[in-house]
Image (cartoon, rainbow, N blue to C red; front, side, top):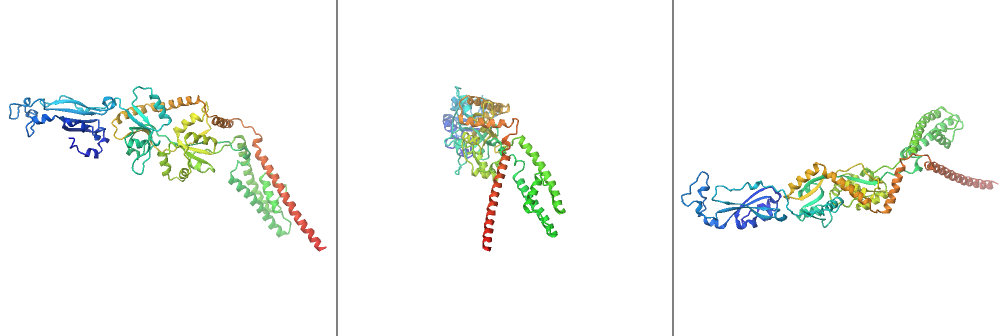
Length: 555
């Protein structure tokens, strides 16, 4: 059998079918060389019928099956000797390769011996065997040292019968395909057979080609972390009721109305020969109407009066809206707009962002690279890759955002960037980006213990123990870390931001900080008036000097 074993078993990738039923026949001496072949390394039910060499020699040639073995015939085949005279060597032994016997190392065991002189074998169907234990087999785990995995390992260190060994991949990456068809990171270890299991990987069509996924937790999402919306400067409160566009249109309307009023009055006065109002007076008249402080004098002609009437209606609406909005902005302090999407992020001027370096070696990088969204492309082009602590620290200082897995970011925020009451100045975007369907354990393809782990994990997931465990472990870890000493600089900055946020919910009293804008407008008006005065003085001096020279020439 060792020389004639079909090579198609390797070519057909028999190791991918651990539950296949395999029956082999050959000499007893070849049982080890056959069952230990790599093609059967994952096969749970591989049986071998082994004949002794001497038993074959005792039989007549050509080989004849004794008549006793033929159904319905109880007499020897033309001989009075029968099977009893064949000898004790005519027997068949049934062997099986036990994958995880002998403390998980595996061995070849004899299931039964079949004496051919008996009518039928006296053992049960060997294909009914079900693997229910690994019997101490050491499973090799390749995973990255992130928080939840570390806790899981730590809780098992005290167990004397630890059934796995765990180590990170050499390149400390989750895993991506390479140009030569291989893989990097933890998936590379599974692909090359260095590891059996990897924790917390998301599924994808490419990954499912090189590993089998066992779903353990719900799929997490991508979120953007930034500083919470901050209070807008109080000196801008007088211009905040209208947007920049509205202020531009309003200024243009005042100027246009003043020019139109001047043209109407001037055209009519040219016809009658009377004196008309000046352009500057018309513009200031239009401005005074908007401020609800129009002069007592009115345009002399009906055309100007009609224009003034409609402008009074427009001024009434605009001034009423402005006053109402101003009261609201003085009563409730406004904040900056939160960042809830990639579009909000890239539209901010002089804003920087990054991606958690831990997730940039997996599905997140593929999502950012292959996205057709213009905002996502711009984000990926200018993104940094800080670690999670450094990225959140920069976000805490403002004008910086960090993209990452929601569960990881929330855990880091609870650990390092929240006070004892759980308050934090950091903000998680309301838009959640779903880029994966689920998370779970990745197993090497064809692993014979796939059903055992699937059964155990399914029970844990269905009864909700996995989510409960994650919440309890996270809460315990947060409580432990908060008892330790933290970075004082981060804590002081965070405390100031939290205090500033709490001020928003207090009663707002009108003070000088709300009227800073009024003072600034007054100062600007004084400065402009002074500049105009200087200009008038220079113009007057220029023309006065020119007039004196002209008079001197005449005299």
